[in-house]
Each structure stands twice: as structure tokens, then as C-alpha cells.
Length: 618
Image (cartoon, rainbow, N blue to C red):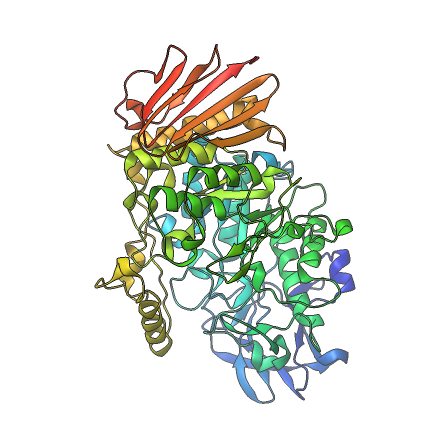
């Protein structure tokens, strides 16, 4: 699609923001209901204000203006009833940060991915990345040289943490305030397009984490234009909810829907990970999530687009089609697996972990169902949680051992490898990557990175002080952190300590687990029993309190995974079984040099895992 064309959806819903039309000319459209006068204040290349364009009021609280003979690169702010000027909250580019002038851009990148059709969801292997800490440079383009290594590893899709413009030079991204403007510190719009195009050239999909349940506080100018962006009718942990279902909510919903469309159409993204969908409060006849799914899937005809929700409610309707009363999303984070595994191997028991035993019976049940809670009472929440997962295709469920929340929301940002033994880390990895569900790796997990991933911000002094104090209060009641100083999110060192050290992947203590990930992902891609996952073709059962087995079946082949959580496992296997790998092999860093299969019985000391193939089993 050319930069001057409009899709059917933008014709139905007139655009907001600034864009270039044939002529050339720049057109602005701003929603500022209740205001009498809105003006465009043009800025020169050095950020100084200059010429002022009065805007013409339209129905519905909109204002428009046109600048003839100009195109991409124009910088501007908006003055509202004489106040300001302020950045445009619908800005597509903020080259000087969230408080600086907005910039007119056009999606005229020279794409080379015309043949790209996306990735089948059943083959997804997600790799979650924070752009700012993934490389020393912390940019989109600096990630490009790393893509080939991820392909060789077996990853099929990058999942970028939020990149919408945020205050300061460093942030997780969940404080974003300019939803349409990729952060300039990462390389801005051009850098993101280069990364996506390069990923597609290597066969990698790119998904983006987006935040629609709340907007960050610093640099958020939405209330300047309209109080109707928010509502006091609903509340979230971050304050007043976004107004998706009250009076004048139409343009607010369109803010999100246009954003969804832009990422997929103009940046060729293959999908979105929707942050905290449980906090998207919408009592409209048609839920916003259903509209998001429709807009997203319509934004890239002929290309596979995936929408994945972060939602702890275990709600099956999220992935059911609209015709069955669902929201037609493609996947959702299923955290019960992570929580059971942490309880089993690391012993976590506080907070929401109190709802999990980590016992092999419960872990096997989680593997059979997809999630553990299907309507049982939650001690942590004080009410029932979850719905049945029966009949839902396993690729809908995203499983992980680590993600940005489960690492970064720990007081010291420590990764799983700090809390479990190397043997346990390897065994857990085997179960994750042989399960029938979609695996997600957090950057550096494939070599058991030693670098932490801490919570970091770069707010102005007053807000930064509040964030630091709040962070330390948050962990005051956790026994394991008693007497330890929680790192200051505002400190530059907190950010720099979180940078990956890619050289670790080839060092002793790390290269073995890196090889384990490669071999497991090769098996996942090529073994029929692992490649084809469907309900009825897998099972999991406890082998007493200290071990379990999982079975995968397809095309006359069975793969068995035996997991010893602790102690000695002696388990007979079918005649003709052959060992494909065991986690304690020396090449992976283990200490078991010979096959654990002898005389029809697998014997290992836990924690350990063994993968076996049985052809045409009796």
C-alpha cells in the first residue's frame, strides 16, 4: 500500500493525527471536544516554534488544517484554547522525545518482503526481546545481526516488548504515551521497519507488545485535548480506566483500532501481544477485543496475523470465534505452567504461587489441559478462576519458564538460573520445548544468561522518586528479600546491568544449555510427534510424587518425555524405544556420559529429563 492510499477502515473512520496527501500537502485532524480554538504551531528544524495555522472546527469535536506544498518531515505542536503548545497524542513520530514537537512521516519504506506470508501458529517459537537491553547499542538495527543466530537456534518469531514512545532514555515500554510513534532512542519509525524487513528476509515473524489498558503518566497529553479519553466509571491498578464504553468513547476506541491497523499495515508486523487484556474494561455490546481482532486480521490481506493476549483469567472465550461468543484472538499466555514449574523446582510459595503445589499430579494435569485452573477456587484471589480448556487447539496456549514479568518483577531481576540448579534448568527446558504448547523464550534464556533483567525507568525527578519508593514498598513483605536493597529503577546502573552479554553463549557453563535448546528446537521442528500437536494426541501422568511422563503421538510415532523432579527415576519403556537426548548428557553440561536406557528401563537421578522415540508402538 502506498503512503497516500486509504484502507476501507480509514475511510469508514476518518483519520486523526497528521498525514501527507497528494499535492503534496499535510493534513491535520485533531479531536478536542469542548474546546473553541485549536492551532497548529509549526517548528523549525531546531525545535523553535514559528508559523501558526488555525484549525477549522468539524462535527463531533474535531478540528482540521491543511499546509500546502509540504510533506514528510514537518514538525509541529498543537495549541488548545491558547494553552500549550503540546505534542500531538496521535503523532507518528517524536524525534525529540515525548515532550518535543511531533513529526509528519509517511510509510514509504522500500520493503523487500512482498512474498512473506507469515508464520503458521502451530510452528511458533517466540523469543521475547527488550530492544534497549538486547544489544549494547539498544536499537532496532543493532538487533539485525543477531537474527541469523535466532533462526539457527530454531526461533520463528520475535516478540518485541513495547516500543511506543516513552519518557526519558530507558523504560520497559509500559509507560508509553505516544502509541503511534516508535521510540526515537531505538531508531524511530525507520529503524523498526528495517528490523521487520530484515527479519522477514530470514524467515522470522515479528510481533509487538502493545498496551491499551492504561497510558503512562509522564508525557501523556490526552487530557489536554479531551477528558473523555478516561472514565471514572471503571478503575484499574493504574487509576481511571480508558474510556472504551462511555459517552464520547467512539474516538477513544478508534485510537486503539487505528493503532492496531498502523502496526500491521505500515510496519508489516505479523501480530500483536496485547498487554493485560483483563484490564481492558468494556461493557459495550461489542467488546473492544473483538473489534481489535477484526481490524488486525483485515489489515494485511493474504498474510497471517496473530493476536496474543496476556490474561490471567484462563478465559476460553478469548480465542473462540465471534460466532461462538468469543473475541477471535489467536493465543494467550497460559501462566499456570510457569507457576507450577517454579513451585516444583524453585520452591516459590508467596503471592500467587500459594495457589500452586508444584506436585507432579498438578503439573501433569496442567500439561493435559493447557492451564490448571478451570473454575476452582483461588486462595490468592479469594474466588473461583478459569474456564474449561477442552477442545482448544494447543497452539493457542503460550508457555514459558521466563518472561519479562517473571524476571523483571522480581526484586533483584534475577533469572531462573539463579534460583534452580543447572540440572533443573536443563530438565525444565526439555519439558517446555517438548510440550504441545507454543513456547516462549526470554532473551538470553537459551544460554542461561547470568545478567539480570531489572525494572528501570528514566522519569523526571519527582515521579522517579515516587517510582523508586513504590518499588521498594512492593517487596517489603516478601521474606526472601528482607534486608536486601531493591535496585533503584531510576539509576543508570540498573539499566546497564540488564544488558545481555551475547558472548556468554559460547562460554563454559552456558554453551551446553545453548546446544540443548538448539537440539530440542530441531526435534520440535522435524519430529512428527512434536511438530503436529492436536487434542487427543498427547497425554501426561504423574509417576509418583517425584516424576512424570509426557507422551506425544503422530504418524505412527510416539515420543516419550520422562521428567525426574528429584530422586531416582527407574521407569520401563516400550520395546524398541530409542533415546533422542537426555538433559544430563555431557555435551549439555551434565554428568551422565552413557545413555540412561538399559534393558528396557530408563534410570536417571533428578532433576533430569529424557526424550525417547518409539516407532509403531504396540
